[in-house]
Length: 537
Image (cartoon, rainbow, N blue to C red; front, side, top):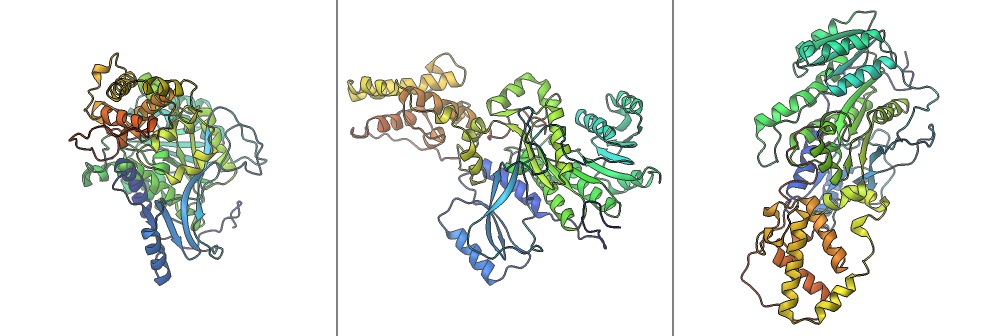
């Protein structure tokens, strides 16, 4: 029978899903943690011919900033995260602050149009914007039979189970490590039963393929498996890339990556309405301190593309932070995320975006409540991000890009009347005072003049805060990388002096050692002390 959505039916077992996606996820984190050392990512075709090799060599030796490339017979492509236009089949209505973005490619050189059979990068999927809001499709996605939810007894799994029942699931199979022993599992089962569904709550390590197969084989014929929602995953124990061990990597990949692969292989012959993978923003743009988590989630995006190419249903959603679960119940972490421009998504709005993705039969998208004007300056402080350049251009000017304040020239005039020694001392006092205030201290004594600002606690977000404070006082157009280019208060003050008085003679040289520019100790994607996937995606 033909697929009702027009997808070709699979006639033979597909090849094993691709693994290069994990490397892309890991690489995006390495780029954040080691910006001075990082080169980039290149996705190559299965066969690298002479033309492809020459093209790769040219790109590697070119004076360019692109660091995520894909080479195909049709040309070279650079990766971009973009906010696309409204889908043609839905209304232009929006609710809440959740935005949905997509990843696409920008061709770097003239070439013929790509062939329909030409495989696109395995580390990514073609993504599009789906505005959040109530479903408006003429024929909304619904299901029946059994819906499997991994991580089914957690707070997010509970919401997904209710959502599945509301969309026609007759039976929900909720798998988690603790199963019926998980807190609230009995209450969840009772709630779903009262809604008219049959409920099975079972303990299962989905990284164990045989255990997972046993649960799938036990499903009754009258309640066949119709949809899979893979929401399980852990990030506890993740670390920066230089500290990551093979054993830790294997442990963190198991639930998310192996679970997804086993679900794919065990359901490839089943007639599914949907195969939904819960990925993360960590896979879309990276998440400092979470290389294994990012790698596992990037694999999900690649798996979705692989399934689509094989004629199988798949939708991978890279989520931002969910509200009302996890970090939303921890005010300290929520405040830290908000300071970085990351806000928790309203769960109902997020689920509406998921519904919209299934209505439109989209293979991959990113859903987040990120304030890009606040997020981007810190994210790109240590290294530019071509990936996010389209979002930067589309973002309204925020505090970091505000016009020069009126009182800026007044400071220059006041300093111009002073001897150079006094001028330098006052600028140093200004930097130390503003740096102390940025870190929450009451006096400049908390910021020694020669102490590295990073050692005092400055990360990418607080570095941008200090830049904004100094910009407001001086009226200078200062870069977001100010703290990383000028590592201590003395160096920053010297830079301000040069910018304010470019014709003044340079100050006496001092025997100091410049700290190499590198990533901040707390990378710009995850708050310090937060190792959970719902804290930062």
